[in-house]
Length: 64
Image (cartoon, rainbow, N blue to C red; front, side):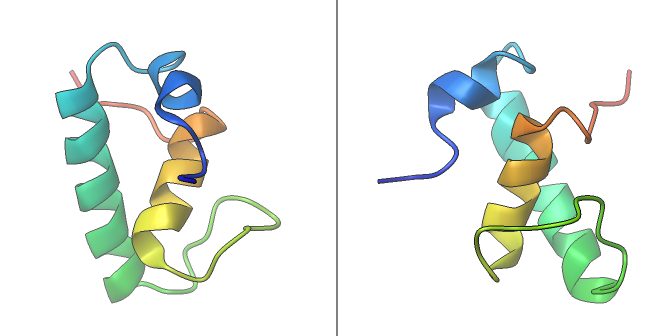
């Protein structure tokens, strides 16, 4: 099962497309800067999953 679920992600972001775009950008940033972590603890080591966890925790916002 995918963690966090799409329902948890959609609470903070309106569209699935925007979730995917935000997660991809944040994952690329985490690959370039691995020490730039936002959360204290993550459930996984993969950058895409970490970015999704940050979005679910409402720590990463979309720019207007």
